[in-house]
Amino acid sequence: MLIAQITDFHIRLPGKLAYRRVDTAAYLQRCVAQLMQVRPLPDIVLATGDLVDFARPAEYRHLRQLLAPLTMPVYLIPGNHDERGALRDEFSDHAYLPRDGEFLHYTIDAYPLRLIALDTVVPMESGGTLCAQRLTWLAGQLSQAPDRPTVIFMHHPPFKTGIVHMDAIGLDNEEGLGRVIAQHPQVERILCGHLHRSIQARFHGTIASTCP
Picture 1 (cartoon, rainbow, N blue to C red):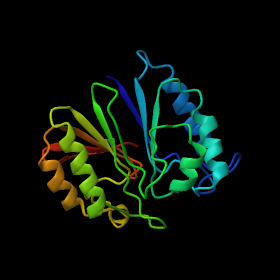
Picture 2 (cartoon, rainbow, N blue to C red):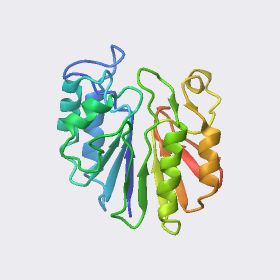
Picture 3 (cartoon, one colour):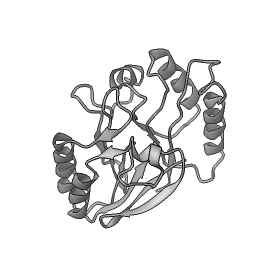
Picture 4 (cartoon, rainbow, N blue to C red):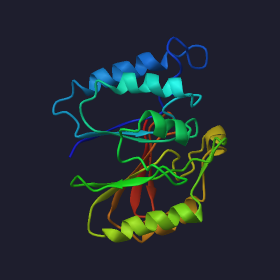
């Protein structure tokens, strides 16, 4: 099974630049074109948050247009720049996204590798968290299939990087996540975004990594 991870698009309205200088739409367009040239094609694409920049409905419409050339399933999760309701509304045809409930996390059992999407968002905050409710949900999902190789994907990475300004807006309660992961050796990898750079770290018996 071949997985492509893409992350942190920060898509704005058509024609608008991020940070007054970065054409994020053009970069995503190039990324999508490159993915469609890979042989063999990825089986799925995981998009790990900060999909748009200001969580405006029109930004999500723009994002949909940019992702449209991808012919394989695309699984979305929110980051701290996203808004759950606007994401749900624009991608209402993505049946895996929960229609109700506070969090946008879900499990995909359709592949040889089990996929668990974990919502780390705190509305109006740059940092993320894993509260007791979210960790209980994750532990329950992992307990349902202890023999299935599993990948967890989430926005905020569960480790300190040494990058002071990013660690200040990192994940709260990484220790709680570590306790859950340590009990479930079937977790092959934790895939994250948020840092805009590639970092790998050992994490309670598995490996956590971030995508640039």
